[in-house]
Length: 288
Image (cartoon, rainbow, N blue to C red; front, side, top):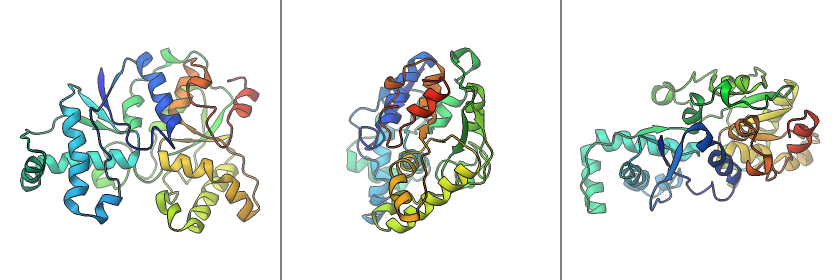
């Protein structure tokens, strides 16, 4: 299946590991990634401060470009990009005034958008089977961290998973042979981009999440969100200095663990790019 792939601004930089691992596992799972042609930044949250139309037009243009690529599905691995794309498509189909303004801005006419927009967990959760597992992740204990953007608000994204106790990544990890530990911080906010304006709030949020993960007995945190992974991985040293803690918890993308279980070498999954190196843990369990 051809999937329109929107990398956004982060997957060539701060979330390169996610991009690398997605590309590594897609072909073996029967997916052909087609990068959205001539894509632009989705605007994320910053476009809202400039204007409502801009916050709609930026992601809507990407959806239109993806529609023209001849794909049935569209994925934006960054949850912020996914949310903006999903909502832009809905407005594109439901708000004729905004659609008309966009047609005028792009000097282009277009019909209803029918491409299926999915988040990165949705893309893989029904495609990974036991037949793909070449080396089970036996002995690896994880907590699955969804963050606050993928499953909330429930009125909009509740169709994908339980907004309070999501299970999709848990099922994937169980299938791969890892042990998913139940914990109460699955959808806790990591403070996202608040790190740029209020570092103290970010350090506390990360401290709380890492503490509960450690207290739960996890060897590692499994993430799907680019900002969540970045905050929890990159800021452990700062958190340890500020609070006197000794966290050393790898924060690994679920796509990296899928690839590892499929027998793909770790260096082809970006496992050498983390701030908290997951390789010693994985080697101790004979998984690397």
